[in-house]
Length: 249
Length: 305
Image 1 (cartoon, each protein chain N blue to C red):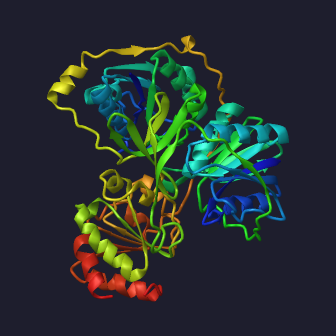
Image 2: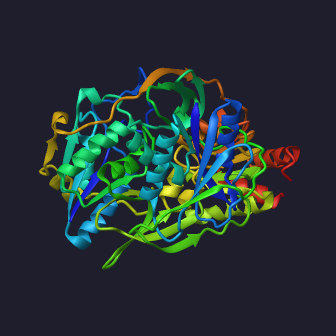
């Protein structure tokens, strides 16, 4: 079985995102998006059962490749990435187009994603990739049970539903569905010798186009900075009084 | 501009997200029709004032790709230029699929838009709602995913008069369905929301928030951090990738207020924040801030209500 996981390198989320002409500024050193750890974990659990090869695919400025290394440290076997200046500020459709073409080069049976990236959070790429690849999309998977068959539990607006994992499909995994593993020292050392390969954009068949024109970013003044009280044991009373005043009780 | 609104059904009628988009379409005088996707037998979704087409799917199989084919066909047959859907599980899927068919990238997390001639201009909220990001769509088709609560819901009379298209089953069968019991106040429409964050230290401490919620008839939400930690289901996550809430009173318990959380709650009318860290960003949004330990303050409130 070939399992491909899409993973994204993002600026450290502890820092505020900055923009240049509408495009997120990316430092040389980016980290693995925590969202993707859930997808990688699902892939590794499938690998343990079905003896699969797990390939990470990624698009964006490669930089120091710390994020890709982190994905390999978790236990993925290799990584492929596309890094091309012409993709700077790529919209979600173009991103999905590149990733689906990359997935084709891995002969993926199963393609796995997190539900949305922490920096761009458009939340549409997994579904778009499935449509490009003409595969069923099992989105918002929040639990996985691996037996002889694999059953996937999807989050829906009303609750959840279970489906049997098709042999070929795209899966998006929500945060919290599985517990991503932490690499130990041995895993970290082993990742250093795993292959990371650059794929030239020109070798891929890209049909999507840029269709969004950046107009501007406007700062809002919406900070209330209301009354702040240091609790010395009696601050609860202020809240109780306020709740009464607001007629909540 | 010829517009298609993707509709969803909740409790046998159009969801509030759908009604909010209909209101915006009315205000912008768009030439709109609604295509609603659901599995109810006789939903109340028809209306005298717009064309409604019901794509009825089975609850026993995932039929996304067939539903998408039907919608793309309607878009092409009817010369639709603008396609609108709410940022829900279902519409996010459908708009993404359709975007590939129409070769036009969608815009997610839209909080407002306007039409100037043939150009659709969108506004997104970024950095936790501290800034607005504006762009123009340069395609024959514009696809927008709109955050719930961006507009007031339309006040329309609904009936059961509409055309229905049934969808064939697909190969992916759904073999088990679980409906979350929606007892008590729901996040989206509760007047009071209490949210919990890491400051509660461990899952067992959620009980103090539950007790307060019961006393105030409030819905309970959580940050991404505690949802990731498995304290609460994803459906209770408030924030960028979760729900947007706008209650009369929002009580943030042990939440530092990362921008991803702020975007889901900053428009609440009155915000009370309790956090140990005086510098926590949540205090900038709060009308009333208590610098203190949630684990000590909340039980005292519970005892005194």
